[in-house]
Length: 498
Picture (cartoon, rainbow, N blue to C red):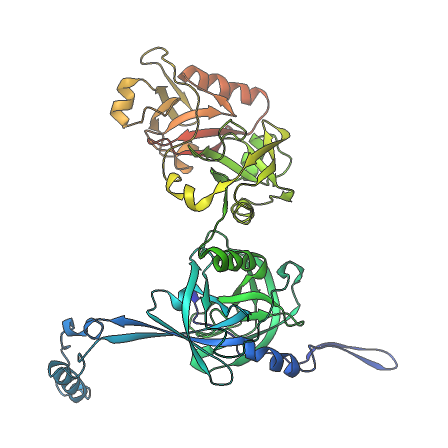
């Protein structure tokens, strides 16, 4: 099954559902649960605010068909005449008389009638040369692009508000939506025009791996190609989602659709409308999940938060407020239960804001303050090695140790040259990994560098042996290792010590 982008939305489902009947000794009692008796009044009031979006892209030379050779067909094929006529016309120039246009259909909705602002999906208008907005009364207006955000797949368009009277809808609070709440979608499925469908919120906080801030609402209201960018309404007529994707083996609705929650969309739309671009908060850290093994190694009672795997140079963290090995459990008053919570919450925060962050460092929770940078300015730094590590030391030449299926030695100049390890990387280098060891299972390879064990720096092979022995004496089952790649990229792995 594949998650497919949809050029947008929903085919209906709103009827009373009989939950069951219980037979009693004297009388028969029927218990029913039903949806709204009718959404006709709600739909009628919202239809003028929902638009169909048609975008087109100019393509040179008939879309490249001039390079397509005529296929070889079996003798007597019933398709021979068709292909003969097609390729003859192309050679005569009938098919390539001018630039061709690739068409795209989607949906959208008016959010500001005075300014003429319309929201849709980025993938609906991506690379478009011309965008046209079609209203429910049949009128059409040309639209210009105000701004897009590929990370959330949101775009803001503008039409001339003086050209016709516009009716806007407002965003609601997607955080208040519960699984089982009724929702309604209006969109342009398969180019059919304004279509209303009804369903419920099937699930919340869905991660479909479409972007860094996945937190979708899932609905069983029918969503099909052409519905993308259309609104998902609550029963008060407020937009609580932007319909964006479906899971479907055939390309049609099977009752699993996804909407960007208004909690995320509203801030993005506001920034695009004001600046034409996004301005997200940025903490400047590399993170990874806190597994049960990592939590045990860090002395945490439960596996939660985001583990800091590295600090990006020239980022907002300049004084060691946060260090590799810390676990962020709360950001600006909001709990970080899962690693993916942190990027989304940070991105929603204003650039330049000083926020209080709760971290767990060596088993002790403490609070620090960091002034956020701007993600868009810092993204180019994210690919550079930049985590702060322990100072490099000399030590004895040639000393080795064997632990947990690995052979390690001092990281001297000869080892650096042999394994291509950068000067900024410090620790002990891994020279051998046993094929059937825990280290091999965890993806450890020759040339990786151990910089810390249980949040204690290691500089010599003896440090590694001593630290592992110490953990075993403490009754620990797992050892938490900080590893650096050849270019300094840090990550944490846990290894069983039994």
